[in-house]
Structures are given as structure tokens and as C-alpha cells.
Length: 144
Image (tube, rainbow, N blue to C red; front, side, top):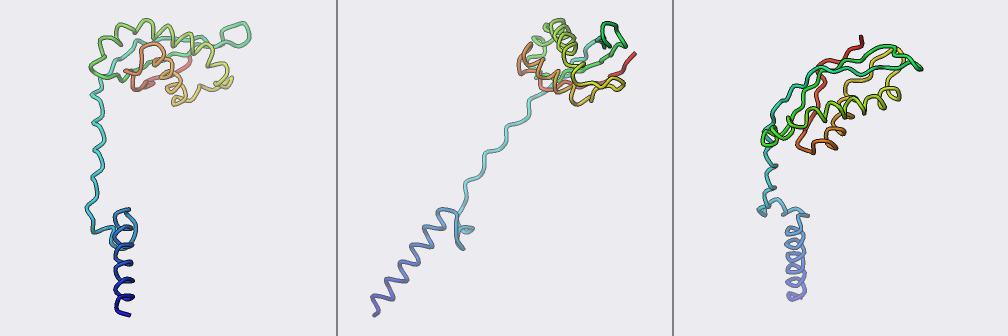
């Protein structure tokens, strides 16, 4: 009888220890846990202000208005010179892309949503200058 009780106690102890090692059970909090790896530090970003540029908004075959944009690019500081060299290409790609994007996403009488335009331009910037461009901020967006 003593052997049976002793066997059950040992079996329960082994089960509790195994569950604790797996992070389950009432004793799991007593074991030291591996510390989670610290999140990598955010990259050091630089701001590159682009010159204001315009994109015509068409109504049929005629220009109904002109959309003017003033943008700032947030780029990794170590790639700032490379991205600045791409500014003419970026601006050209932005205009070309917006000529296709705006008629599909802007209502006849309203300006497009700034957040949507910024997200679209970020994808264009990634294609042209790579992922060193971390964000596109639309500082001003107005129709003339």
C-alpha cells in the first residue's frame, strides 16, 4: 500500500514538473523564463522635402482642375544621399502614377483621401528608390 501511495505521489510530481517545464500548470510561474529579444531600434530617419508639383485632373478630354501636392519623404539617414539622387525620378513616377490613380479614386467634386494618396505614393517610392523610403507625408494637397 505504501508503495502504491508513494508511486502516485512520484507520478503526480513528475506530471507537475513536466507541465511546468512546458509553461503550463500551477508551478509554471516559478521557473525562470527566457527573456524576449528586445525589439530592434527604429532606424534613424531623415526628412527630404520635395518641391510642390501638380497633376492635372481630367473631366472627359479637358482638364477640370489641377491637384497640387507638397510631399516630405521619410528615409533612412544612411540612404539619404541615394534617395535625394532619385528625386527627379520619384517626382516623375509620382505624377505618372497619380494620372492613373486619381480618376479611379477621387470623386468628381472632392479631393482624394490624404492617407490613401500617401500609401499609394509610398508603394511607388518603393518601386523607384527601394525600401529606404519609410514614409511619404502629404503636407499639402489642394486643387486649383
